[in-house]
Length: 144
Ligand code: HEM
Image (cartoon, rainbow, N blue to C red; front, side):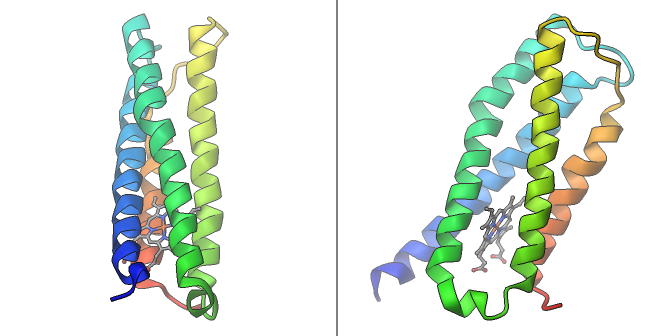
């Protein structure tokens, strides 16, 4: 057994664990900053900031770092038919954009900018649908 055989499942498990923390944390943040058409209380804003800082941001970084690591280990074998990975990366970019929108909303709320109330469902559509498609692509690896 060479060291990659041992390392690969370990990195991939880390990738999946971090991804779960990213998606789960994002759902928590959405519920806190967009509570059903009202503006969130100060406590909810602080909680959202804490979840973002201590769960979502590190989880996002670890997911991307370990995803890049597993992709480089699989290397040429994977790249030979990697259309699923390219589509996945596009959707990962969109997921990062949703993250950016949430960070901006938290910052605007905390500095008292004129932020409109929002429904969680508007964000949850993206926060749930995008990861679902990304996971489906990673698991089924369709070739287009
Ligand atoms: C820079 C970004 C990313 C890269 C380069 C990347 C790359 C990869 C690669 C190469 C695999 C290994 C496939 C295999 O050996 O079976 C993988 C697995 C996986 N990725 Fe990612 N990924 C990234 C981001 C994400 C994100 C954001 C999610 C979810 C929201 C995700 C979910 C998964 C899942 C669930 C698996 C396991 C699939 C399986 O074992 O069947 N990845 N990823």
